[in-house]
View 1 (cartoon, one colour):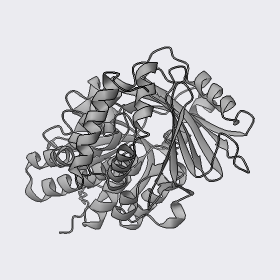
View 2: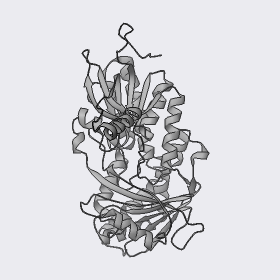
View 3: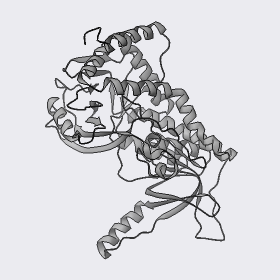
View 4: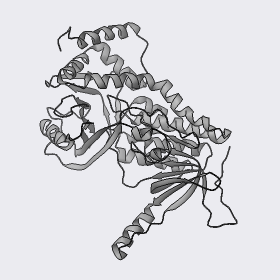
Length: 422
């Protein structure tokens, strides 16, 4: 079915009407725009200028397969992970029969947006302001384009008066993929204002020319130490020529910048060149509702689909964008707003259990140095390592070896009650 933008030809000043306006051009929004454009919908993809989310940049093999990511976007391949306990005890976990791809988010996100544009989406750089309703009830999206923002800045400089003009377009449906503190979500979806976050901060630095004692270009380091993160973890993720060194915390007043400075010094990265610094809120759990019951559905961070405990978000964001696109397409075809609920329903059916388990793990194991020490000790177990990476690489709970799950359950209980030494 081919949808065409509608314009009142008797009124040249009338607004353009799109089947879908996607607000936010990260992995989730760009994926949704690409899919809907490929289905023949008229799509406006609106993305803010200069936005790069702080992110480790890891993408599992399933993402590469499902979303047809070309090899040239992988800036490096990771073949092992190192878990570091508060005592500085280290557990190295090899990735058997595979690797984790690493991407640079600036290049990766832009490639996704350009792919959406090549499929037929109209890609514009601009900033969403608000959503209103036209006289017929159709959504009206107000935004400032890059050009209008530049003009406003010139007017302030030259005249001392800001140009308040914004652009308006009509949308039969809207996908909100504008981040963890989504402005669209707060305006349209009940409960979005209550989303809880962990805050992430990282510094992109120049990678050492050769591997150092505490840095290996093909290994991701995950550090569980209260001084560096009192309630989450810190990381060193190589990206080929660059490396992300970061930390996360939900604790107010905790200095993440000081934490990263200390981590860089301890890992021998204190003197390497700093290329940029970035910070952003990361959702702690999916929202209970993703749609407004009318014509808006959320995706990605706006919907809260970042994995607890690990903070992994790229795969879940792209899947969320895909599911939002499918729900919107069903809504456009049927006219039934109930179709918009399919995005959350399908996501939680496939990944809700994993998010629930990871949420419990984060709330328990990350709360004290003793528990962090025991958690890293559990990671030495071969059963835990294999099942963890099988699940991560394929994005589903591995059920092929039920006895391994039983063994892990009893080992977890032993660590939980201190029956075994950390």
